[in-house]
Image (tube, chains in turn cyan, brown):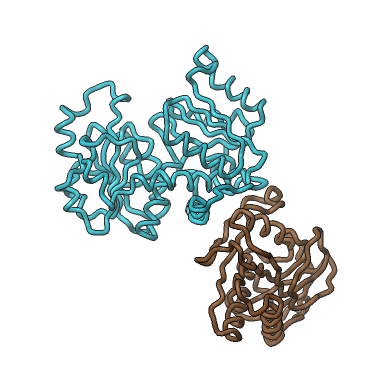
Length: 311
Length: 200
């Protein structure tokens, strides 16, 4: 039975389209005066955050609350985890509390996968290490679809720290499922080892790819995960892989700029580009709530989940 | 209305034409006459249809609301606001089936506050769809009054709900299904009465 959303690869094309279509209908809720649906009344969603996050946690919390679910927030700081409790014991505690859904963010890749074997509720991966962040990919696809229409055959370029990015991997998998052409651009040192097995193209030259792209998604350089020198200086990185005004001017008229946030202005993206009307950065945040509502509804709303992977 | 009586997948809506088990109880001209009569009743009861908003319940109620709005406009000579309502998220049987796809909820630009909302659906059965629709309306605004128009009332109510306008009262047994097919959704206008399909 499908119960969890751990990887963007869990989603078939039909699953992904069902989530995006559902999100499209739910998007109207945010413009109403009563932003609430009774659908998940009496269900409990636990936000289990072992890593710092503001927008993702708030986004999941808002999504669950708009569907009338009870939300329990758990962050590792100030919890029994800091006293040495293991993930499994934390999971069993949640199980005893009767969580219907667990949203987990963890620094270790694969933690949600392990958690899914211990709890009866649906597990939603909200980012695990450098592995995946499927709901980010869904909200990105939703944002692209709203701006550009059908994604079939669209050229999407993802630029930056692919090595440490869970957003890049989830996006490549989901966008491939949806029929888009994805190109990853980064310095050779910032590609993971098996990137040639991913369903996408890779390039080291941003200027060659830029004029053909319908979407340019910039990734943050995750300095906190870097334990070695991956490029000589920030300035050199910015000059070769940053989206400045000159590069922005060489993009197609209809092309959009995305960034999953948090962004470092002046590093991977110039402030003028981030604030341009063709940038979807603020939209992505609003779309995040809508898309996560769709995921929670489809996983928890019925007798059994309508989407997601087996476990 | 119980989901069992309403085809969910577009494919199953197409009842086999030569199938002896399905009897056509209303043909296209009957449906046309019923809608014309309902349109006149709405105008009569609402004193000219001023302030009326027609809200069709997804899916076939939306089609019927559109047809009713056209008739009201023909008679009164001014546009009648109409929209669609999807009450899926408010249903009480959500947890008995896997979560399903949502339909569109679209209110006319003027909204529904202080209007007379006429909910339109194809078949009135248990009344549970209408209850869900009333709950959904609650979150959308505060109408002055809510009325209900249905093409078929097949009885077997499970809630204290009745229709204000009925195209045809159709006595049925619970082991039967009523399928409304409309040209916009299913190629032709017909109401079919048949035995309940046994799940394969």
